[in-house]
Length: 210
Image (cartoon, rainbow, N blue to C red; front, side, top):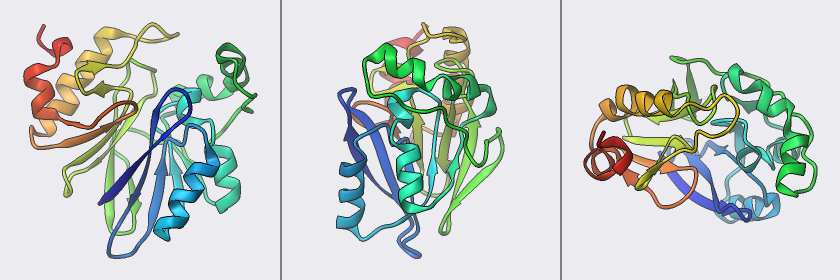
């Protein structure tokens, strides 16, 4: 699977366009804003997304999802239904961050642990990794050894857990029991900041040394 990170908004959020070389089928993951920038990157690569995938319901990850779904006439898929309250409260999140109002959002398909999403011939496994939000999911391309991790784990850090229904213990447990066992060689694209590998974080991430 190929990917390109598109940093968007003042939060420098990593929207990712992913695509399968064989079929040229593409998907957008976490388009947090700056819809025109995202459209320009897709046009430059000659890609048209077949779906929009969401890891969780925070505004900085979903802000442009509805606009892009309407523009490309594609479904929004994910996150887990436990994040429905975040998507229902997007107008409140908008006011909290002083951003243009984002309407409540309901995806065409919620995702559960163990389900898969297909992008061309690429199969993405869905893992539920709560803590940053209760319904946070990640997408894992096992064959390509690539993980789209949202705000669960970062290069040198982990997701914040001081939001409603956040849990630091749940987050660390999800990283240690679900992500690290995927393998040290797995590269992950986080929701913010530079990429890393699970092996590097296992050895050096200060939050995982407890």
